[in-house]
Image 1: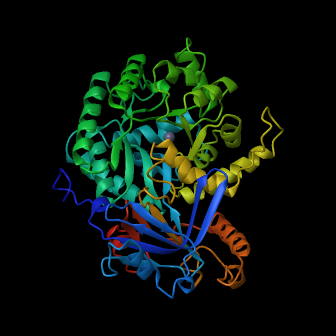
Image 2: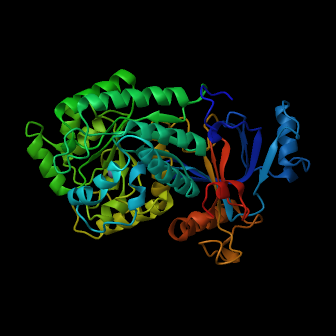
Image 3: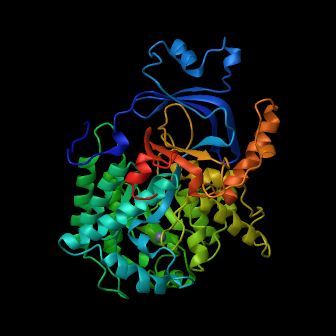
Length: 511
Ligand SMILES: [Zn+2]
């Protein structure tokens, strides 16, 4: 086992042999480019890295050689016995899509999904969130049992929804946060572990820490994650997580800004979610011109910063975020559920050229599926477009391509892994989901696709492309986790729902 630890069975680095995938591959390498590649061969090596791509392979053009024969002959280093082969090429209702990247999710809040409709942010925190997060704290086995229950389930659930990488908030507690990182490795999801940092929680003082305790905890987590990652790969990484400005002293913010610089660690936090929150920040930091300026003052804004929500920014704040190259995590489901507002995403994308990704924001958001968040982002953007025109000249309505981009490449950029995940490109890791829109019965799938809507091999490239775009619409707007039938992270299969007794789905405890 190429790991420094011996007691964790690490699914995401289990040995694998070379695998060829053959069929339709769909991704969004840029914000405006939806690329659909039919009859494509993608080779994934034993490190889980894509090292071979051949588009439009038709045996008839190659002396009737199968893709595997063609590949072995061309490469010379493999025989067909060394190579696994997964072929979905005959069925255009199936396609490979990059794994989703959720850039804002609170693992600890998973039990509160669906609870607290329309409670404003600051009340919602005191009534629902802080009491729940407190249960991960204290001494002894009780909190570990609680963490096992909640953290296992949230990773299982997001994997079943096709999320292969996520940037998580845990709680202020270091032991359960370290355990969460171990679970990510064990279950096979790439992840960022954000121990929440907060040292002045006046409305709920039972749930806060001293700066001294925070420093000790951060050191514990940084050391532990360094220890449990496999030597050749970083699958779990700490992320510096000031909860949000109102619960952090200036000393805490100073420490976290310095820590990020010293250890080259990414940062995530909340900003400009709710108007009362913004007023509170203005009162607490009267010397800073804006909410964004508070984080800037303490060196917390840089190209590795993920800012959740970003709903009520002033033009100056937009410019500051753009200048600092921060990424936005747009959480439309949460923003609607607790009535925070509608973030003007196309303005950020096109007026300011800010990178935008998507977050479920469990449990402010009730939906753990990034597929559904794409849909909600589009709907929220349509609501914005129905309002009187504001200062932007940009059409507010997000396209499906923009939504799919934010869920994959936008997320990859936000977490600093744009050269490793988010699209199907040589040299990237194979983080992938297999989507199946075929309708055999109405009970096993969410989508209803009719025969005439499915591309045919005999049709022209343009017709096939247009039909596939329509099928993508069916997936985004009427699909759900039932359509996500297999998931790979780091080239390893971590979910298999292709048979009713799929080993992984079963061992994950979710039928
Ligand atoms: Zn949040």
